[in-house]
Image (cartoon, rainbow, N blue to C red):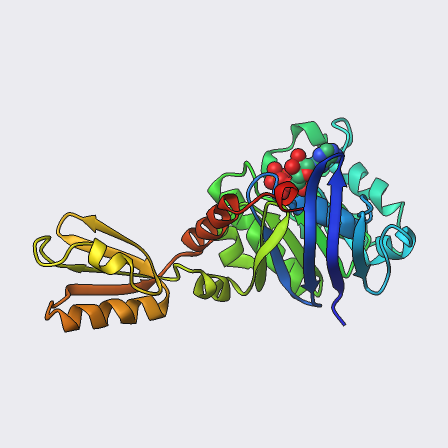
Length: 310
Ligand SMILES: Nc1ncnc2c1ncn2[C@@H]1O[C@H](COP(=O)(O)OP(=O)(O)OP(=O)(O)O)[C@@H](O)[C@H]1O
């Protein structure tokens, strides 16, 4: 049984549909990324998992418990760091961790946790005086202090410089290696690729792709990029753009760049062969997760909205 199971989730705010038909499984020991543009429904989904929001339809189970019915049981297994940590500016790091620990039956030792998260030097500094990276570490500490089986981390590295971001990624890996499952909401493809065992891409309130980062790239309609040199008078881009599996053809100087599926690549090679055209300097590579993501999100933008299709 998955540790977190979300089925057919729907949540509306007045007339706006925030999420619909959302399914998500999170298994013990994974880092699962929830990706998507602003307003895609990521926070709404994790708020339903945390029991902070009650959906209009669908089921959520966290270690078998329904979050909005059994808040205590869910608080014991689930730690939450949401977008605004809600910590008071005047609290010191040590006080903040101790305060959250007091809500739990069997908390981790706040001093040990502060040490483990590299906050010992600033343990007596007020929250408002910590750097962005230290505030994020403190937010993770408060999410971990109840010794949860799973933590929800929402836009953990937004606003951090590259070094602090990498340090935070390492910390998330250590959290996972210590036996805690992680659900990570992020806008950053590099973060997803570096950290996540699996990702769910959300757009306009729905999960539009799910799997390992590699699977999501491979399933993209534009999973492969090929380019080669061919004189314009020998082959027009239009001759290839209608082939099955070809998503787009662009001329860049004397090179043609074709994006599409693996079948699209084969169709292009076949078309070149039958025309007796040699693809000089042929390069074929997988699309990046960034490109696959943008393709998925743009497709969803072009589709009818949830309200229109309801
Ligand atoms: N409390 C609320 N009241 C009204 N509408 C809301 C509320 N919370 C979310 N929404 C709407 O629901 C949709 C999904 O929002 P949500 O915050 O879940 O998206 P998100 O993917 O987390 O976005 P972001 O990346 O910007 O945080 C948006 O259209 C948003 O305006």
